Image (cartoon, rainbow, N blue to C red):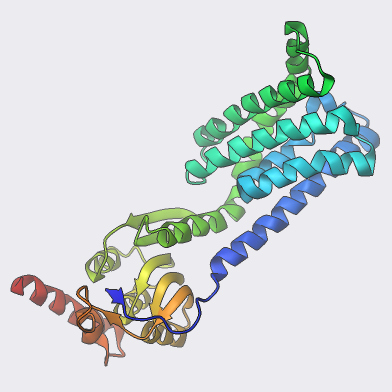
Amino acid sequence: MFPCSTNGLRAENKAMLNTNSKKIVFASLMLAAGIYLPFFISHSLMLVKGNIFLPMYIPVIIGGFFAGPYYGVICAVLTPFLSSLLTAMPPIYPNSIIIAADLSVLVLVSATLHRRFNHSLSLKHIYLSLIPGIVLGKLAYVLAGSLLLFIYPRKLSVIAMIISGIPGIILQLSLIPAILLITGKALKTPARIEYAVKKINSGKASLVLLKGRKIIDVSKSKGISHLLELYDKGLMKDAFVCDIIIGKAAAMIFYAGGISSCYGKTVSESALDFLQEKGINITYGETTKIIRNRKCTGMCPMEETVSDISDEKIAIELLREKIQSLRSSS
């Protein structure tokens, strides 16, 4: 199925907008926590020194995992400087600059690897994302300290810098995976939706099926046959579907399969009307009046088959017959 012509301006991607808004809010909360937590522990509880247990790092790293590398790095850069201005901890020179370098590299590496692992929150993938970030962050810490103090670090000074932060590193490796696993149940779904929409918009997939926080299906297959297979297996029930093109035929299969919501890069006007009438939440990139066949010589045969049909069950049977007829004739 192929779109004929777009109608009006491209609509804003509401799913992406909502996800980015949540990322900004979450990163802001982690920034505030990164400022308040060291102050609270040091002054209210008077328990530990910040340069040993590094309480600022924990919320900022978590922010990078869930908000992504872009917002995570912004949070990592701002937190030590705002903390210095508001609480006088740490000293703005050289400590805040060195910590910002450490945190920025740590968050950039960890968040990027976390994205490469498709936002997986298994312990294996958390540690494969976190440990390289910590190691490279400490290298950035040493390098920044050397440049700012105009000296080359001696072996003893490097060891001292690493040893002083070992309790904090142990705390990060212990607490962060546990926190990610707990909070991930509530925050993982938006990340999966973003992943699915990006797959469709970039052309890397034609269909992505999500159920809760699980990716059920990622396919490059175009056409109705694959949708009918998913329908027959009962995989559409309560699922979120991202499809590169949604015509009325696909929309009727989605509704019959019991999807909760969907996103289409291109959506036909008849599909949009059908889904909205059935109460299915749909977001999209652009609309088109009709879906043409592959040669663009007329309407897609699947769309033509269901153009005057209002019952989704009847539509599915007619689509099966049409597919069988086309296969037989070819």
